[in-house]
Image 1 (cartoon, rainbow, N blue to C red):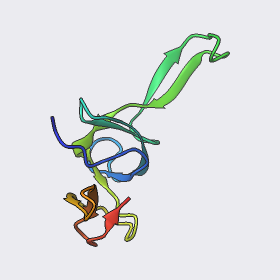
Image 2: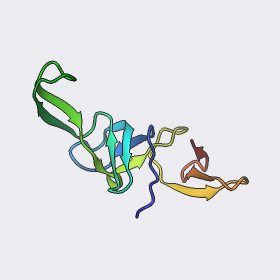
Image 3: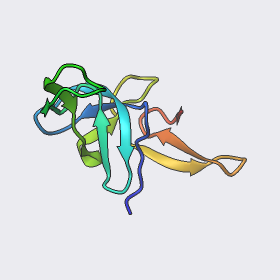
Length: 106
């Protein structure tokens, strides 16, 4: 299983595909399939019937998962895309560190 460097609520930049160059917040992470759902990216049309949850049927746009290798984390401090590495701190907890700025990503 591949290590997941991207977590929920991270800001990411889409590197390839139809939505290339767009930025968004990660809504959900699927670690087993190494896919993520990014807010406002990879929108697909879903045809739905009226039911108890959605009173009106019709065509609904929703986000579809994209592969984790097609997104890059945006450093919260500098606002630029960056690679990250994982390091243990003094308490033995794993923390993510930006390769561009060298600071911790929370």
